[in-house]
Image 1 (cartoon, helix red, strand yellow):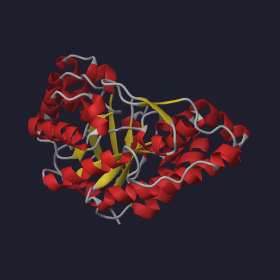
Image 2 (spheres, one colour; image 1 turned 180 degrees about the vertical axis):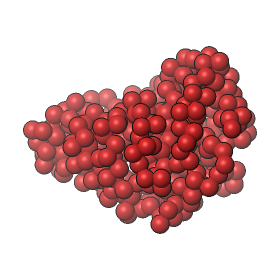
Image 3 (cartoon, one colour; image 1 turned 60 degrees about the vertical axis):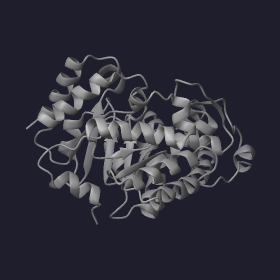
Image 4 (tube, one colour; image 1 turned 135 degrees about the vertical axis):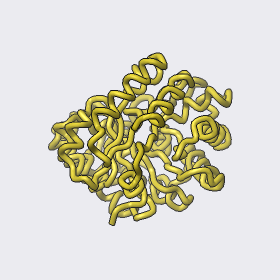
Length: 329
């Protein structure tokens, strides 16, 4: 059964705009990144500031892809003005994987993002979408990304064991977002784009599918984000069973839209750094206009950044983006 989100995209005469850019809202509130990922009110304020400025039709919690890894015991580098990152490897052997803890949704900083979702839902301003990491990307943060990629060839059963463990946690975490009243989550699976198409099917899509089948409902959608996937990956990405997909700059979106069923929703893929962060308002307008023109024939598309818009992005560039989308016919 189609989700409410998918029906909204297909039924509207204009383009739905949903850039991933919570940290850009800090330019409006004066808070820093550390506050946004450790204090629910600071994050909520940034999201609502963007909503008030741009009349956004969706409220997104922050893309903070170290929060889940931290619950498994990973060391995190935290700075005032940079998005937190994982340091080193938490598990390198089968024994260390077996000894990993069994965290719960709401442990450590996952509580911040769940509480932010609750507060945004309570605001009643617009549908709320949480953010979480995908299974292979979480496994890579725990095991090491390059080491996990190598192990898919040399020790595949070890990787599969780790994936099953993190998928159990992620199913619960996504379910916790649903319990807040959120309309869905954006699940970021960037590391899967580093796999071959066959590897992506086995080590990512199969586990995303478990989460989709466990949690997605008509009123709760999982939007699968992969900023590294290319057109060759598309058939395997679709095996995840999600209804809505969000891609980065490497994906040829017009070609992808030509390949998928009209009921499958695709979004993206303006470069978050080159266009939003480092471009001028004129460049943002031109790139946005060109993408809208390229996909004009496809109603099953929403326009977005191709990944998370960095902190420090000029608000004038977001002004140019939303104005261009609003004026496009």
